[in-house]
Amino acid sequence: MSENFQRIYAAVAQIPHGKVTSYGSVAIMAGYTASAARVVGWALKALPDADTIPWQRVVNREGYLTIVNPRVDALEQRRRLEDEGIVVEEVDGLFRVPKQYFL
DNA sequence: GGTTTGACCCTAA
DNA sequence: ATTAGGGCCAAAC
Image (tube, rainbow, N blue to C red; front, side, top):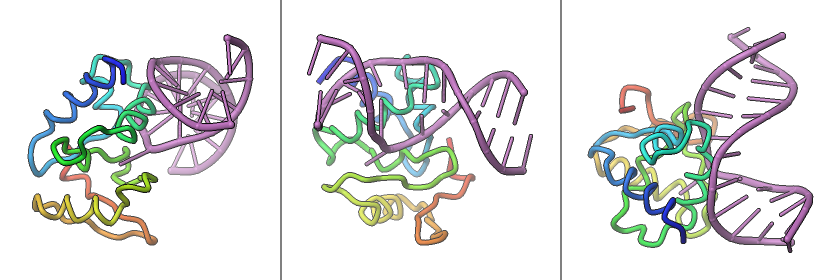
């Protein structure tokens, strides 16, 4: 685990309740360039404590939940988002957050 | 050890 | 509007 990951986790923790943001925005908040979005994906995949970090508020730019982590699937992410009052719509078998919820 | 591969985004054509 | 390519950094191979 590197310090860069810690900065990413801190940036994710700053996302307000009931809002979502994109990977690129998290990268910028963490002090990276905008195109370091993939690193954010790696950081969240290797997330140490999924109970305290609001990782579910990070979606891709189109609002889709592109998650492949075996520990936590897209279903759990949708459940955690709806617990915050976010309405998640289903498009072609994939979950999507409407653009109005973006930060 | 170098090389490839990602929970992706931006720019240019 | 859509497509192609480069970039970012850490793991996995």
